[in-house]
Length: 198
Picture 1: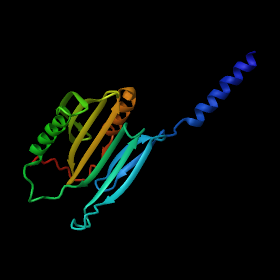
Picture 2 (picture 1 turned 90 degrees about the horizontal axis):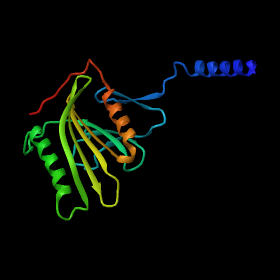
Picture 3 (picture 1 turned 45 degrees about the vertical axis):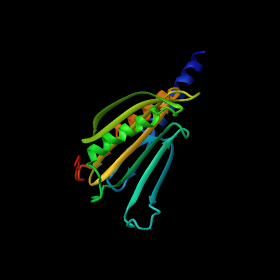
Picture 4 (picture 1 turned 90 degrees about the vertical axis):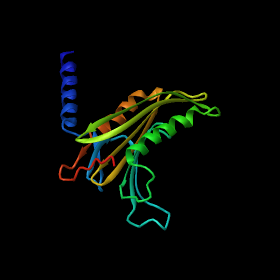
C-alpha cells in the first residue's frame, strides 16, 4: 500500500505543478478610457460597441457595453459613453442623480405596482482612485425571490460609467463576485481623472 500512497501524492503534485501560475481570469478592457476588469474564465460575457440608431445624433456618439450574466435576472451591465456637454440639461448631474433615485423608489411604491420596494441606501466608493456613486435597493416582485440591485455611476476621463448590477437572494455569492470584479478593476494612471458633479 505504501506504493499507492506515494503514487497518489506524485499525481497530486503533477496536477499542482500543471495548474501553478495559470490565470483563472480573463481581462476585459474598455478602450475609450483604458479601464481593465478581470472576470472568471467561465463567465458568460456579451461585449458590444453600439452606435445610436437615431440619425440626428453625431456618429461619434458611441456606447461601449459589456454584460456579464448568469441569466436575464442575475446580470452585471457596464456601459461607457462620452459625457459630452449638453446645453439643454434641465439640472446639474448631482441633482439628476438624486432625482433618478427618487423615480426608482416611486416606481415601486405606487399602488398598482406588483413589486414591493423593501429597502434602499445611497453611498459612494472609491475604486482605483475613481469615485463611484452607488444606489442600492431591494425589491420583491410578486411570487418571486428578493432582488438586490446596485446602480453605480462615475465620471472618468470625460466619460460616463454606468453600471447596473442585479441578483436574487439565491445568488448572493454571484452578487459578491460581480461587486469584486468592479472593485478590483484598474484605470490607466496616464488618463485624466475627471469627477465633476456640475
